Image (tube, rainbow, N blue to C red; front, side, top):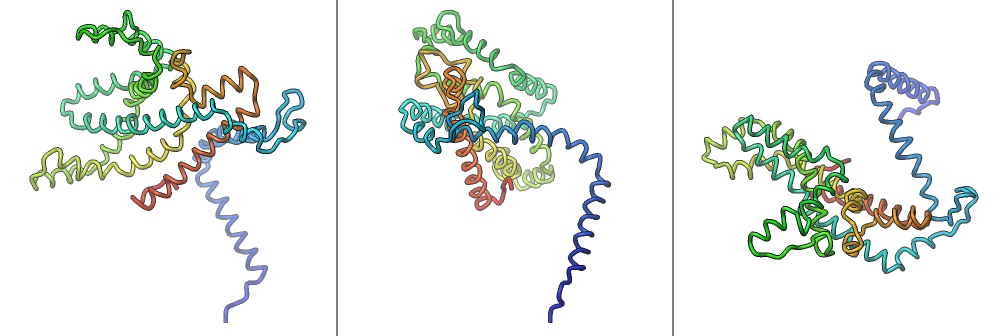
Amino acid sequence: MAAKILPSDRTGVSYETKRSFLNLLRKHKAIYLISLPGILYFIIFKYIPLLGSVMAFQNYNIFKGISGSPWVGLEHFQRMFAYDEFLRILKNTLLIGLYDLVFAFPFPILLALLLNEMRIAIYKRIVQTVIYMPHFLSWVIIGGIAVGILSPTTGLVNHVLGMFGIESIYFLGEEKYIRGILVGAGIWKDSGWGTIVYLAALAGINPDLYEAAVIDGANRWRQTWSITLPSILPTITILFLLHIGNFLDFGFERVYVFLNGLNAANGDILDTYIYRVGLLERQYSYTTAVGLFKSVVGLLLIVLGNTLSKKATGESLY
């Protein structure tokens, strides 16, 4: 017969749990103090602003505030999907996000594998430094450099095309090139920085595995396929899941510096749309609904990707 748990026993367990919690806090107080600024940052700048999402369900009036503005339910969401312009911009965002996932995400992996094969240390460091440098430039500078390189009159690209008898192309003046330019600029700016994580993962592989593979007669390609890639697969999976969580969050600055009236039809995305309609035209509630939609889609994608990854590879974010 099971012993009956008396209230005094529960109190004892609760007391022991509380004492254990306080002991842990006292023991690791330095770690908790160090983490405190980060926790406050997320609370103040990430969680408290979420309360403003209720504007998506109101006709927000700047003078009445959130508490005084009338509620309209899902009216702004219905209006959002009824707009042809919104659907066009959603299509642009999805396509650019897909191109970025297919072409930009694997690029740091490829760079890290190539750098890992370099045997001359000084040359390897020089290459690493060169490819890291663009990450420290702002998108305004990146945009200025790209405009100069792609200029139809003085740009390097058109100069090279002219050597092969090809007429000059106004790349930023034709809408069919803008998606490739956006993805290419992102690869140039951030792929070198992204290799840091993969190089760190590569450094953690046991060298004995490669020595055993050499004894078995495996060439470099076979070693990469059978040892290197499986060893860094958990890192690739985690970064992939983080990437798809930002699938619709392509970045305002990254697109805005390249956007003009000639290429906006294929280059305008949700972030630039929110800026133009929300801030310039002061439709706060409507663009809050657009932003909320973007966040919910990102959340669903990361939950779905995490579930599939856990079943397929055993690796997941949580």
